[in-house]
Image (cartoon, rainbow, N blue to C red; front, side):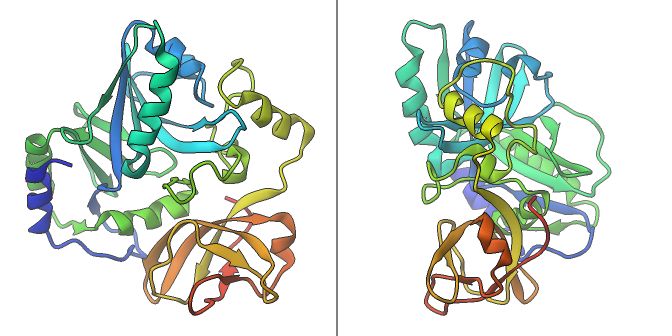
Amino acid sequence: MHADWIDFLKNQNLLVQTPTDKRAILAPLTHLAVLTVSGKDAASFLQGQTTCDINALIDSKPGLGAYCNAKGRAITSFIIIKQQASFQLILTSDLLDIVSKKLRMYVLRSDVQLIDNSNDLCITAIANVEISPQDRLYPYPQLDNSFLFIDSPEQSRLFWSKLKQQPITLLNSDAWLGLDIQAGIPWLFAQTSEEFVPQMLNLDKLNAISFEKGCYTGQEIVARTHYLGKNKRAMYPAHSVSTTDILPGCTVTDSEDNIMGTVVLAAQQDNATQLLVVLKDQATETKNLQLDNTDHDKISLNSSPK
């Protein structure tokens, strides 16, 4: 991340909890980074590597997808933005280097360039703000009246200055994750990479998997899970009264310490923590779910799978 952007954010009063109302929000998504894939063969290359249908993408309209290993486990989830012949993959900065290295192994003689933009592009999220269409501003997938702004540190600072002229609440990136949890967007980090088949993260319900486009890395397992109905886990919104940090990858157990699932995302809201958890099917009938942390904090499911 660019030093100027880091210094700028240090002087902002960023709240650490997700608001419960629909107030105007501005947040730097410092947990995310941009990997640009360009070149004459960029589209066909990504079509053979990712779960989403690259050929169906519309310029400047973000979509969701995943990149899997050969066993069909998601290495990363991502937002993807097509810009004419190039593509911006937005994923957790935790996984950018890993994903970049793995993708480079498959470039071979293709006309494909992979560019790490984590130091020169800043990602900002906006919600519940009246804003005019402009370059570098894109709809945020799955969230109504929400947008992504992706630009240089200098242009991002100017963007913030303009928006702060109106009443607006500033959140840090962890607090924005609360909105992703509400939308059921499953960001993966190092602790959860290669742990889940995409359907376990409900990515099929988010139109992040194409079952018609043909082969891609891990496609055989993903397709078999879909057509044979062998997925035995799904992602659920949940909450805990704990206000201590709950990290992705934390195990969920029952009262007898049987492993029931895994935490994908966590964000504090009021006097509780909102969660996305991947659980075994039988876990939904278990009343005594708890985290495998120091305090064995209890968790409760909010509703049906996201």
